[in-house]
Image 1 (cartoon, helix red, strand yellow):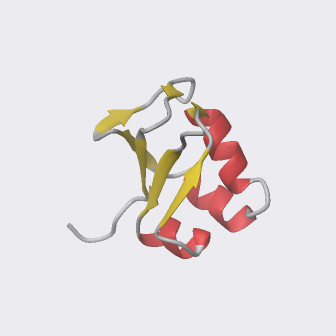
Image 2 (cartoon, helix red, strand yellow):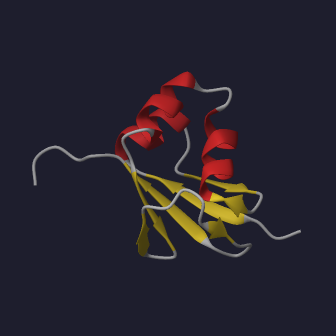
Length: 80
């Protein structure tokens, strides 16, 4: 079974407690729900994140994320 690699950055990494995680493929929305269903802190951070799928920005939470893909979860960064 192939999976999707999730990489967490900054506040998302702190809330998740890991740098990366492998999950089942699905839509971006399905993946986000699975990631945050037992972690209210992560759910709150994810509501403010930007998402990259295989390096491309994704605004459509209905976008399918295929096995072998990488999703980067990028919370807002302070500073510049």
